[in-house]
Length: 516
Image 1 (cartoon, rainbow, N blue to C red):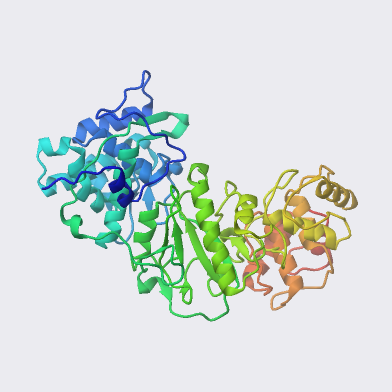
Image 2 (cartoon, one colour; image 1 turned 45 degrees about the vertical axis):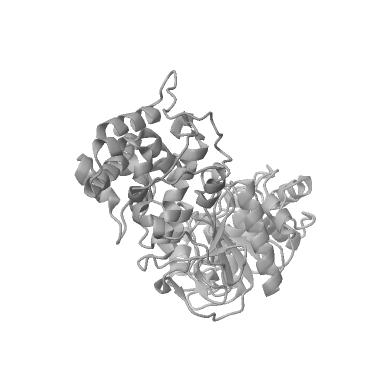
């Protein structure tokens, strides 16, 4: 197969990834041996030797997929596990294949880092044997391109090429990263000339987005979104993929996914791909689908290394464009996180997402508009906290006559004083921290009408929010007192030794407003 040399210009064609959590090291064909090799480095070396897969290739693949983070055995959006993203979903079964090849159980492959790395190596070797690679060919990192494209699971050749390109870009640029336990792994920069095989004729995605010209256009499968809208577009919803950029695009092309977003943003360089037209309804935020435009950001919520400046700037420019084109106010009432959309059980974009910086880049404000009060859970807030939940607390305090100042989403001295005064008035520990008890009292404040199954309206919504804070689980704040709300009331009454009747009467309201 002919080799294609990749100089600096050709690397741009791969989609050069500006490493933020990685540094380019001096070129060299062999991996650097650390003086005291840690367990993750040892696992990569051991798996590479056992299955005849280049160690550098395994590390670059693991970094591409997860930034070498196993995420405690939790699955990605596409059902992938561990550093090597071994997948178990209706259409891809590399987890099960790895189990057959290694003899390790699926549970071991999901939760044990060394087993997961070994499983990834075993799958790649299986693909290599199926492709007929000789021992000499397996030693050459450049021959593995078609096998990496297969490993990514994309059925669309262009998307598969995007996946393999990412791995080879990391090989070319080098990686220095922190794995589990803080272990440092270094992959030196090297020259690469991948032998693309059949993927050489698969042109990388280059079609221009029909709505945002700076983006690529790779449409999601029609089974994963609805054509048209049932309501006017009024918000932008910020997501985190819980998976890789190419993997997420591929997942949206899989009809089994039943999920999509309008845009996906890459971590390293801010590249954007549109997968659903803005005029159509992507399936990304349950109750927010009809009115929202969803933007997915490559990464995992518990690993801040994914949230690069390039990503923030590129995404903010996209959001500003969406707001301008659809007349959406550039404030935190209309630019929201997935976790802030009522009726959702997701936590993205999570605590590592810098809302203040993002809104500055958008050119909007952290306040303004109608303040969001309904959340799937309520965080503990204190001096220095920022975001939509701080705005909610400030709004509730002001409404009750406790001056928290401007509703700006920034927990400063004035908000602390207002919280402390509110706590004293309600007989709570006056520590200036908005925890579960203070949230419960704040959210339930107001009139106390008798409510039971069949009741509707704003008072029911207040009750539902207060129960969410008090019980520590999501009670959908839809203003409709159904069976779920009735059960939540019963659970609250039982846990607080109140009369259990499933109705919100004086005793239940009194307990909630006292922060019990």
